[in-house]
Image 1 (cartoon, one colour):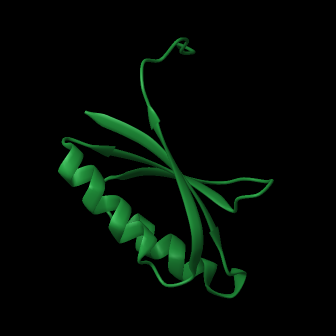
Image 2: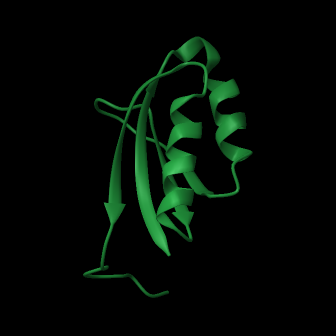
Length: 82
C-alpha cells in the first residue's frame, strides 16, 4: 500500500466543487482544511505506483486547483493508540 498527503492551493470561489470532486475519488481517505501556504490536505491510499500516478493526475486536473505538492508517507515512527 502506498500512502501520501497531497497539499493543494485553490481558488476560493469554487472550493465546494473541489471538495466534492476529491470526495468522489475512492483513493482519497480524508480531507482536512489547514493554514499556511496551502488550503487543504488530502490523504490518499493506493495499491500500486501506477494507481498513485493516476490519482495524482486526476487531483491536479480538478478545475480550480492552482498548485499542489505531494509527500509519500513511509514508515510511521510514532502512532497514538486509543
